[in-house]
Image: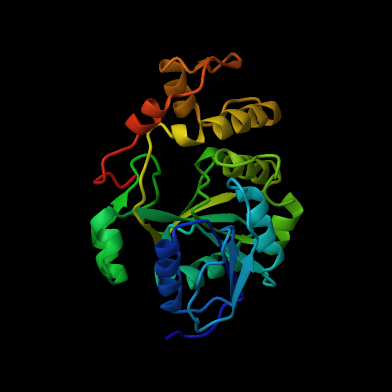
Length: 288
């Protein structure tokens, strides 16, 4: 049950993770202020099965190999037909006040507005729970400092978080959306944050609402995305003059996979072995 409908479209990209998507939609159905539309860009070979929702739901089936996140997000924005956009990762369950709160923030200021993400472990993700219970079970990210209350302007564009953020549709268009030259996983969101900063669009971190990240298997470092990370890191450095994802690059160098330094170039030495990829899998209890 909602208190009205916002001029906000909620956009999500789905490939696999059907149960995550259903929990996202269930959470969205509990919004205090409903979105004007939810757009699901479905990259699966076979279209996902979606339930009826108490607001307009546009299911855009666009089968894709790989994970073309930038192109899919841009497609979702084109289909939004709303002056305010909220991008929500398929792994996230929105708090009941998320749509209304991010929409109100965008009404007050032209900005990139990110809300805090609380991470759920496997058990918390699987069991139905209220937003209050999810808040009790969720873990704050140790490297993503959010204010305790209200909003804070964040000068470090590298802290832009694409898991759950709002932006005016006009500003998204002015930025040209996400750069589709970034293919697959890694750095397309950091590039977007840097370009927003260069365009004069401030980054706001708000404690006024949140989303809850559902558990999925984690690899540290993410060797399953090794080739994408190298390709996208090079593209980012060519544009912005510094290396993104430097923690992962440092791990790859330590493993003897690449020759790299923060001040130097990047050279591929070898591909990770299947055994190394498997060994990077984190235990199920790890939430992030």
